[in-house]
Amino acid sequence: MIDPNDFPVLEREVWLNHAAISPWPAAVIRAMRAFVDDNAAHGPMHYDRWLATERRLRERAARLLEAESADDVALVKNTSEGLSLIAAGLDWRPGDRMLFLAGEFPSNRLPWVQLLPDHVDVVEVPFASSDPEAALLDALDERTRLVAVSSVRYDSGIRLDLDRLGRACRRAGALLAVDAIQQLGALPLAVRDLPVDFVVAGSHKWLLAPEGLALFWSAPDARDRLRPVQTGWRMWPDMFDFDRDDTSIPRHARRFEPGTLNTAGIHGLDAALGLLLSTPAAERGARLLAATRRLIDGLAALPGIDVLTPGDDRRRAGIVTFRCTGRDPRRVLAALRAGSVVAAPRSGGLRLSPHWYTPTDQIDRALDVIESALR
Ligand SMILES: Cc1ncc(COP(=O)(O)O)c(C=O)c1O
Image (cartoon, rainbow, N blue to C red):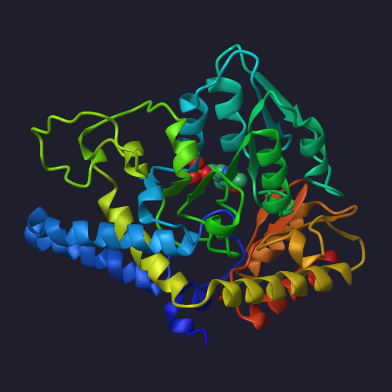
C-alpha cells in the first residue's frame, strides 16, 4: 500500500517528470533536515554516525542492484563521471573498436567521442526502434572492446534487452557498459543475473534522491581492466591510516572514490534507497508498467496522437513519449502546466514519466488535460 504522506509532491502536483528530476519523498526530506540540524548543532562531531549512514547506503545500493557485494559499488558524482571513468581508464589497444547507439543522451556519447585514444575506432551505430539491439549485434566483431548503451532511452523510453546484448558481447569478447539512470529505481535491474560489466545510475531521477551522487557498479574482472585516472586518501575502508605503506590501488570499487564524498547527498540517497527497498522491486515495477500502460492506452485513444513508446511491457519502463500531429507540443505542455501536471518536451513531442507511487487518478487527470488541450 502506498501512503500519500510519504510523497508530499502528490498534494501539490501531478509529477510526470521523474525522468528529469524527482521531488524528494518525505523520508528523504526528513533525512536531509536531520543532517542539517545535526550540522547546525554539532558541526561534524557525529562524523562516526555519518560514516555509519555511508556504510548503510553501500549495503542498500548493493541490495537494490542485486549485486554480489557492496565492494563492487562505488559512489561517484554522477552518471557522466562513471561513464568517463570507463572511457578514460579502459586498457585500450590500437585497433580496438567501441560501439554506442545514435541518439544517446550526451553523457553516454561524449565520453566515447572525447576521451578515447586516437587509435580506437569509435562507432556510432544507427538506432532502430523496431529492433533496438539488432544494429549493435551486427556491428559487433572481434575488435570490439566495449559496447555502451542506456538501458532505457531518455527520449522515447524504449528499453533495451540487456540479456541479449550482454550475451552477444560475451561471445565477441566485448565489455558491456550500461547507463541505467532511466531504469534503476523504476524497474528491477539485477546485475547478478545479467551479462553486464559496468552499470552507472545517477540519484536524482528514479532513485528519488538529491542531485550529485551516482552508483557505479563494476564486475571485478572488468574493473581490473580500468586504469585509475584519479586517486586519493579515501579509497580504502581504513582510510584514516594516513601513514599506510601499501599504496597499491585497491581492487574493490572504492578505488574510484579518491576523496571526501557528498555526505549530505549520501544521507538523502540512503533514505531514498531505504524507501525503495521497502517495496519489492518487482511490485514497484509492475505498478509503474501499469501506469505507463494506462497512459499509452489513454493517449492512443485520442485523435492525432502518435505514441513513440512501445506498448510491449518488455520494451519500456517509466517513460511515455508522444507527438501530437499538427499541434504545437508547447501548447499542450502549457495546458498541462496550467493543470499542475509536470511533463517535459522531448523528441518533438512530450514525455510523461510517472513513478510507481503515482495514483491512477493523477494519470487520468493528465490524460484529461491532454484531451482538452487537443480539442
Ligand atoms: C540516459 C541519461 N544518461 C545520463 C543522464 C545525465 O546523468 P548525470 O547528470 O548523472 O551525469 C541523463 C539525464 O537526463 C540521462 O537521461
